[in-house]
Length: 439
View 1: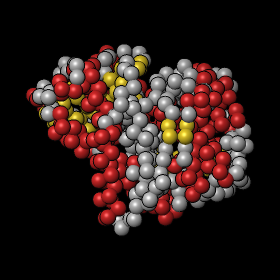
View 2 (view 1 turned 180 degrees about the horizontal axis):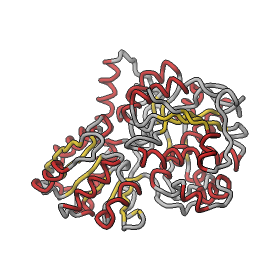
View 3 (view 1 turned 90 degrees about the horizontal axis):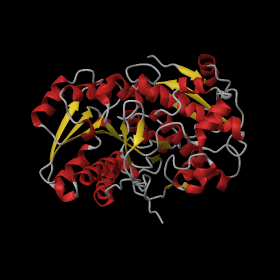
């Protein structure tokens, strides 16, 4: 077993940051956020900017705001190497941390999320699997302790098909198109398949499913099939090294890059830079903006890095996955703030934070106050809907940077929500769960 727990004091020594955090033994009255990270292993290029984004946002709240309504934020990292077994061990290690126990878990792994779902209700610690994990958890009547807003893999897949329809001149033009899904051969990668299959039946396009085994460094056979089948569009659900290899292979067979669209875990800087000029034109989904041009980034540079922009750049500020972690950390801390509105300005328990997540109403005005105006969209969660089915945007790589190249593209709720409810009902029956009645 190889678990490495990093307290921020250790991180500060490694990065030169002067951030302040404490382990549970050092803190009193703190709001404790456990961090399941993977700074090592084959997925480290993706895991490092995620870990840095969480760390920097929590540090920003302490340095700029004095915490959340005066309650200090503390956090502790546990290294999972993107390994499900290690992730569960990290959960057990950290779930009782802080003065009131863990605030919530952000697993950043669909495999780990699947294993933690049955534990959450028992331990009364909510899970925020933002845009990943078990899509059926969008039905809050069955999955009381799990949240996956602002949108899910199934909704994302439906929005991708809507985008293809827009690009082709109408949804009726989908008929007889060829679309391939190249996916990581794991619970994560397979998540979008049921939706794509349902949409293929609805719109009449030909769907090809192409699995890539972990970690994804060998894909010659996959892209030979792509060359043979000649799909009009390729959608990818990849992660880590798989993405950069896929982009290189697509370029090698001269596939049209502007018809190759990754999901939101297949569109980071680490995915495109290694492919050089071959990656130009590649696209991916997103639910927030790329780059470091927002007030929140300026505040991070000022308060976390003491104005040192070079050091902030060295810690991935503005990169896609860094930004995603900042959004994720903001969602979690704003849920705590929502809970404090009901229970008082003190450290919240997991049970109280669960209420805050379910009653989160993040408005455009609040996003502006947080320095995130235009950075991501408002979110309103409910008992019935733990996803919200938010729209996506498409970003494109020009060889130097990502730029958003579409309007917000709606998801297909009419198709996705019935699938969610059906899957949630099956899970409830299998696990003898009586769904809640939501007002």
